[in-house]
Image (cartoon, rainbow, N blue to C red; front, side, top):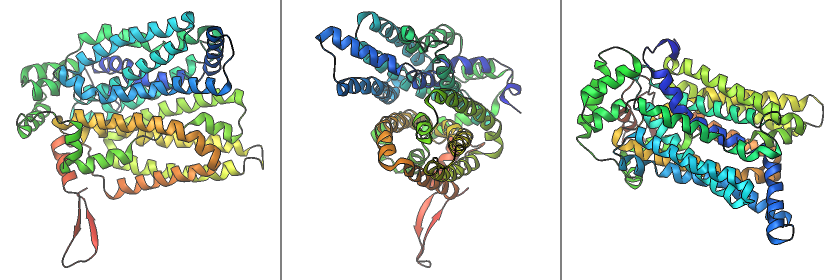
Length: 482
């Protein structure tokens, strides 16, 4: 059954409200910047000319634009690594942290709108940095808050809405960026400030929802408030199994304090969890560059990209229907495996694109297939998996680690992908194909299944993964209890 038919409380409204100030904003910010690119470059040129009395060189415009484009990722990196400090400073209260994070949106919005009237490209950089900080922090809090509020039996389906809201935000940003909507030269500063309006909605509505049940019981020791929060979100019930699970985790932690990132990285008990996160971390694919390389006309690219975005939303929904039935491992290794094959085929179609008019469109078909298996596999499974594999005391530091992987990887790939396309052309996808194949094999042979298990049980599964050598068997073996 779908999530819609499994809840009787206010959980669906809670999920929507949490998404608006969480990963939905990240998706918006990622795609909103594409449409007004030529307008912002023109603004940089005119602003520089008016200020210094001469037109800037092409290299200077490119440098300023690159700084504007990358400032979002840098802000996201700083926001994501601050999640542990901010949530701990507020007593691990994700709700309060999210509300304070939304307040920064007012500054980012005002700076972006004023930048055009102040004739200042520096204000665009600052606004994009602030929007990045908000997005990086909000994504981690979104995952923590939602995971700490979900019953075990539908935890995967609920946590997967993080990926669904991210892909929905991307699609919304692409739609708003159309020239028929806000993708016009006189409205680019309004377009880039749209995410702040969703922060305002969340800031007004989130105070009416309870703190996360796991926080209320494990951190505060308040069983009654935990039960009330579960009933408010998920409807009437005694939630005995959920509360017993939290009590067991509370007893196992014995008041253990929240770990720092350095303590997390040094702890041998979680080395397999960290390796799994590193390997499974979401891949970024710059579809616009791929479409250009495929020979698709520039005027058609924006609409094809919207089709890809819609496919990502639909496949995230499909993944939500499957994740608590077939489990995480199957969706991951099958998804990565098919993605590896698709990228290998894309190398062929890109190499042969000039031989026939229909070959570039076969590349589009492959990209759609890639998005389908990416959305139904790694992109959909990563949010619930990243929350499930750590107990409460490790979770904040783990999300700092995830933020560094995500935003650091986004920044690095943003710089190297264009050079890969220029240097290796279509053969750059052979490299990505190899990465996907390695991830598929790792998941198939090593990663434990987490469906229907408590964080304590999952941690024990990871501790049972050993590289061993026996005196009676000289071959090295890899053991895991699946």
